[in-house]
Amino acid sequence: MDKPTMLDYVLETPHVLRAQLASSPASSLADIFCADAYERMRIVASGSSRNAALIARPYLRAMLGREVLVTEPYTFCSYECELPANEFCFAISQSGYSTNTLEALAAMRGSGRLAIGITGDVSSDFKDAADVLIDYGVGEEQVGYVTKGVSALVLFLQLLGLEIAYREGRLDERARKAELSHLAEMVRQFETATVQARETIEGRYKELSAMKRVFFAGASANYGVGCEGALKFGECIQIPAMAFELDEYLHGPNLQLSPEYTVFVNAVGVSDHERARQIVAATRLVTDHVFVLTDDPRIADADILIEPAGPVLARPACLLPFYQICAYRITEDRHLWHKHPLVARFDAALSGKSENYVDKEVL
Image (cartoon, rainbow, N blue to C red):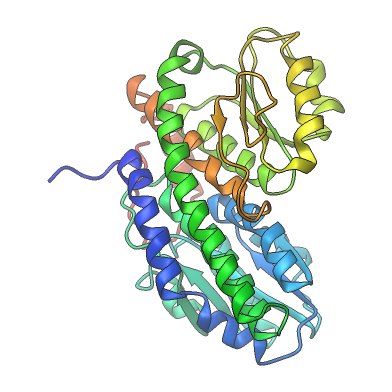
């Protein structure tokens, strides 16, 4: 059997998400949280794990009724590991081999706190570094550029917030079931967006296969989706790709626009619709390569249009398959998996993974 590809894992994602909805993988983490009185939560993560946390944060924050911080492991270890007693902290590494996140777990232990590790591989180095090890339910992913792992991590964190809100009495049983139904609807919309993504990529293939400089704009969870899109385009297609908060895009980044730029605008949620329409119209005065991913039917020529149903803070996650499939398709078609030869030297000199990690990227 051939090795699975990024595309295979994107197509497998809805099955994984439905399994998570059925199995409540966040229950053990909710147990720990609810055993004490915490006033805020901190998620320590980098790369795609950080982006998943950024996507999940608005929904998680709303469910908890508390502040949720997302902090990079290096920053956590060097500057922000003096946790107050009322802060609940855990670290995430999908692979379980990220050196910076392993160091973050060590910093938690060093401060006398419980080192909680969330991973997709419980046999990884995380098993020895964490006092509490939690599998978030993604299963195996044999490629370095994770896809289903990102989406599954988003849902895991959303389910964590939902479970805590229910246990603390902010949601009754009826409201809890309604939220679970909304999250199940989000999985269905994820499938719809997957079909639209493949259609859009075919319909605008010349533009997408010729991308050279890329901007992503979005707010709240839409910004997190943009961050993951930028990461995937950068590491796979190997082009400059930058994500900006929706309105921050106007405060400097837009000044470097030219007709050769490609701009992706994520605008799921009525709060962003008007500003997104203005940004799309203005950007199209400079470049024709504008892609719109939204639930707003009033935005002309939307490339991905999902239904305005379910919890608005959770819905932007449905946009992920577009960027994942696009990154895979363009990289595969243009034979871009191999990096510049000198990148292998970089990796040998300084790697972000531990020595036990088996490289899945092609350097």
